[in-house]
Length: 110
Length: 282
Image (cartoon, rainbow over all chains, first blue to last red):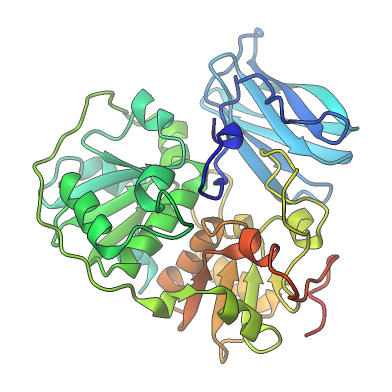
């Protein structure tokens, strides 16, 4: 819950809890949220998968660990992004063209 | 320093769980991962609660660091093996921090929590307590820590290495993309800093690339080995990762981590800032 905790210390860079609701301070008029669920073959959500956000050149931008329900969430910028999931059940890739607001992506691993 | 003295593999770590004189320490900003399962016998350090002063923006002082390590049961002669999530960012930060306070034998677990989990190696939920010690720290070794004035003076003179993502460097993003983007500071980078994202030094499973790959990476990016180097990011943990690569794996001399990093520099009044993908002029 690092992103929304009031603190006298500079907020760290760790990825926050992926199951938490969007903090009220997040302005969807300004933020480009890329979110979704990592699913294994058969559709079961994959908890604890590592989801990597890569920019339009394929360069790493951020990484989060999925929630118990397999959810992930990034705060990016409008444009084209690649997603890559690593898990014990296999890996998977997806591409998303994101706009401001919430962008939902499905990401399957096998 | 070298890869062999600074890094241990997951195989080595699994074989040395419970070995006398070896203490595993998990370091994270959010310690819920530790609570859900950690390397057996590992103690935890909370990057924010344990390693940052609770009032002003700075590290805990020498006495606080001694009290912290004593309470965790870490002795001066112990081999400390650090690991964590977020591709070992906070573990690398703690490594640099332990070096700052002069700990002798300190190692980073290659790949950290991610490789350990992807390998499906065992994790324990058992509570860990170690008998308290009387840890004695040294004064901070400021040869590895840069402050804001050092960063300003380094413009056009030293190697400045910005290890954030390309979009943060250029000023298109203000924070890593798993965090909301509204921030107080200006966007951009320190003029003349080269962009070498920390992630270029790591494989996707979180392990470090080979010595040959790392040497080529920084040579191609334009690091001049005849000059001192300052690495920075947003708050100093991703740049600890790069500091570790440059000084501890590759053995480069006179490398400092600027822990104030962009959240400090980008808030300073009157300092130069460069925007866009090029380093810019001094």
